[in-house]
Image (cartoon, rainbow, N blue to C red):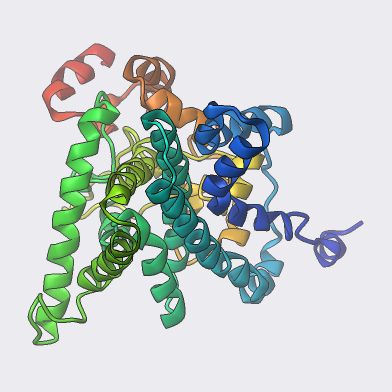
Length: 382
């Protein structure tokens, strides 16, 4: 059969599997229901157990998916509104589950370990919802931009809407990017650097944009203020309704949720560096500047976020059309299992450092290295 005929017959076998992404929004509901079904207190941690136990297991069992859609079908994929609606429905599901979990936290007499488990299960859902906001925030449609801000509101991390699109995508895999981790940097060193750096950058980017329009940074059109305002309204309404007992729940789920975003940032660009040209500008971002993963199950649950190399090299490409590139550096596992390693720095370094060295054929002067150890690392591998 010729290539043209094969392309004509090609279909997206994952078309309806993408809807599984929306089910992650229901993890806190699942936690409550599993406790009621089994009577086991450990099920308050259902969200954590599902994300970091069940998903990695199925990643191993079902393996990788490296096939790409035919290029002559990409336009059709991009224009099929079904794929957008499959993202849209995550937002109302997120809010339904979030409000339900807040009601349980605020009105049920839970012991501290159950309260904590419910908050972490909820943080798994709201953290994954940041990825929903990420997918929506890359589009130019006004509705999608507001849906992106709504998806970010539960974790109170609305500035990601500004920083990711206009900061991270410009500076990715350079020392100037607070969301690109450095060789030899632990996640726990990276976390405060990226949180504070991203916040500062988002505010600066909006200040510049509004000043060009002759407006104050405090103008209501400031995207940061709009996104944070949604969080204030959401959290404020829940506190008025449920009382102050719900505040620790809101804070815990937020902290866990946004650190999920940042630990994913940590593993996506660890040690990778775009080189400077003679002009002083950095080379164009290419697939080799992001760590990639083709683990089948996690990609379904995260709208193919793990095909990160294609996303950064071609950021306007929608999730259903993202591709695998052979030249992309590959993570040894899916995001869930790699997050567990990142939380334990000695294990992370043991698994990842030699992969960075191999990616640069031992020339570590080409890597993005933690400044305090740069000279030692380069000398070690010279």
